[in-house]
Length: 166
Image (cartoon, rainbow, N blue to C red; front, top):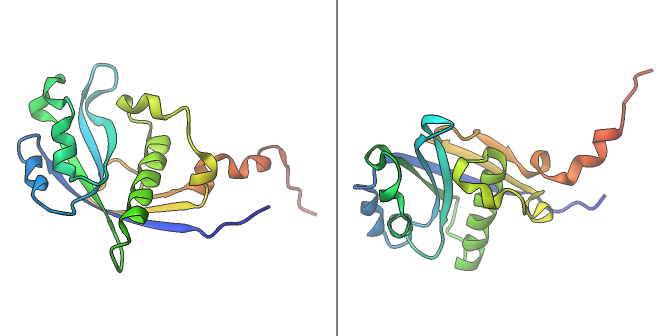
């Protein structure tokens, strides 16, 4: 079995923000990352995870302002959490972009938010299998730790094996 180097991604979550004050995040020059949107869903109820998105090469505030959240049911009660990738140093822009993309895909696949349905069927298992995410701060309903090793098809061969002792 081929083994790649595990890539550890730390995400520091802040919030909640509203649609009105999320624009404060438009002014921070390098405020890129992942975001979660919570609100009312006709099937799943109130105050549930609706969407996970990414802001790559633009700020989180700018990205959210481009979406149509104002036209959703009960938009004045939406809560948004901003996740910024953290580490010892800021990576090169291309590496940062790749990490944001991989983190978003794995978080969507694992948590299955109601409004992310189109991204659930075409998961890049190979690209995500060695990604490991640690969520810090106000990560809300996300799991504190998410492993591509657990959630991709990398270990599917174990599904049919039975281990016997003695």
